[in-house]
Structure formats: structure tokens, C-alpha cells
Length: 189
Length: 146
Image (cartoon, rainbow over all chains, first blue to last red; front, side, top):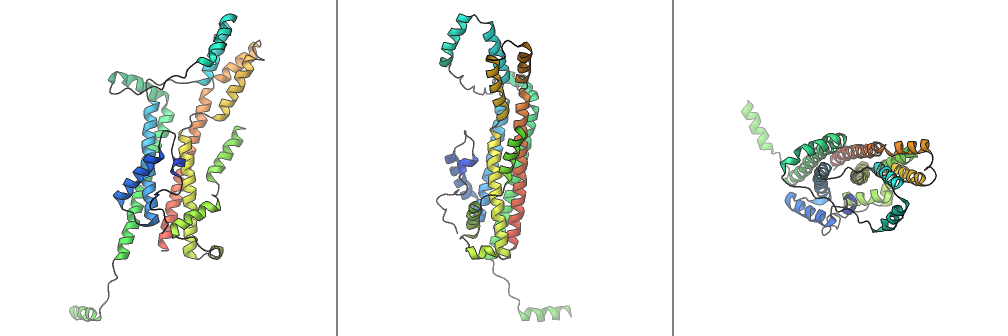
């Protein structure tokens, strides 16, 4: 048995499976809880539990992304359009204003991240509009949710199968007694 | 250039994992690292375990690739092209109307960058599904030899 009891996810490093907004610590905590709930025995079962957790994280991640893409306050950033807009602006500016703009360029602060509004029904039409604009992306995320759920179901089935197998192995084999065979013959006769 | 990099990345996600990685998984599956002599001519049990270990390594690689693809919303090559074009717009082409118009139109091809990123996402999802089903089959095969 591998000596990884204290460190549940030695292989692979969980931070390599996470995005920047997800924490390896939270992953390990969740894994510990899953291990407590599903009581795996041995490396195979522990691995199955880890795969179930990963599917759950995938599902959660996809829903988070859908919510972010549908955020009506989020801006549709188009780098090309931004560049062309900036180019036109500079063309129309007076040379002295242009010099001043170049001096101030380094002082521009990045925009603060927008937070999602909660429970405002007036935003529904805007959300629907964003959904229509990003239909392809939405389809990809929804397909991934369905796929992750399917993977999760299969991982749970396999875990139960391995656990059942282990439980059956613990039951001693039945012994065939000769006397039973004689009684069976007598009964048939 | 785009095709070449795409192919390279695809091969990276689907290439055979390093032997050391496979051996780590094998050690985890068997509970101990097998002897080198056993690996040279593995029996049916060890061969099944080896195949399972390789599938595990492939699954983790595919999953890592899948997670990375989720955070990508644009194609790097297209962004690079846009940046180069921006430099040209400010320097050489500023007086040439035809070139300026061409540059403006290329800048408007934003959807191409997003489409490539979406393509990467779909591909990563497909690789993960394939790796998962292969791994599950290898696990069943391994269990049948226990």
C-alpha cells in the first residue's frame, strides 16, 4: 500500500488540475471529506474518490463560467476594436493633447472587476441577450456539464463495484457437504 | 503557423506519458514498485496493471489540458498578429489608405480568435472523455485479473 495516507493527493499535484481562482487547500479539504464519506480502502478506491471529486469540481467550474459569461455588467472586450478606436482617437487629437496623453499613459489604472448583481429581475432581458450572443460558448459549457455528470456517475458506479468486490472477497467460501447431496437425492426420489 | 502550433499542442495532450510517470502510477496500483526484470517480461497480471497505469497517466494529462483550456478565451497567435499589426499601423502604414483599411478589417476579425479558443475547448473535452473511457476499460480489465 502506498504511504500517502497523510497526503491524499500525492499523484498528481492537485494545483496542476486547478484554475487560478481555485485553491489546492480547498481541494485537499474536500478530498478529505469525500474520503471520510465514501470510506475508500486501498489505492484503487482512493483514486476513484479523487476522480469523483474532480468531476464535481469540473461541474462547479462550468457553472461558474456560464454565470460569468452571462453577467450583464460584464463588458464584451474586443481587442481589435479597442486598437482601432484608440488609433482613430489619436488621429483626431491635437498634437499637444497627444503629447499629454502619452505622458499620462503610464498612470492609467486597471478597471476594477465587476461584481455579479443578485436577484434583480430587470436584468433578465440583458442576460438573455448575452446568452444569444454567446450561444456557441454556452453550448460548449453545457455539454461539458453533461459530460462531467456522466463521468461522475460512472466513477461512482466503478467505486461501488470495487467496494462490492472487496466485500464479497471478505465472505468465506461455502463448503459443500456430502450429507446435503444425499438428502437432495432422497428428496428428488 | 497556427496549424503547426495547434498540432504540436494536440500531440502534447495525447502523447505517451513519460515512463517515470507510468511507473509512479504502477507503484500506486500495485502498492510497490515492481522489479525491472519483471517489467521486461510481464505476466498477464502485470501487463494489465501496466496498461492501467499508462491510462491513468494519460487521464491526468488529458484532465490537466482540459482545465488549462477552460481558462483560454482567445488564441495566442491571433493576439500576436494583432499586436504586430498595431505597431505597423502606428509606424509604416499611417499614410497608406489601402493598408490602413486592410489592417482595420483584420482587427475586426475578433471572432476568429474566439472560435479557435472554443475549438480548443471542444478538443480538450473530447480528449478527456476518450482518456476517461479508456482508463475505465483498463481498470475493468485489471480487476478481472485480480
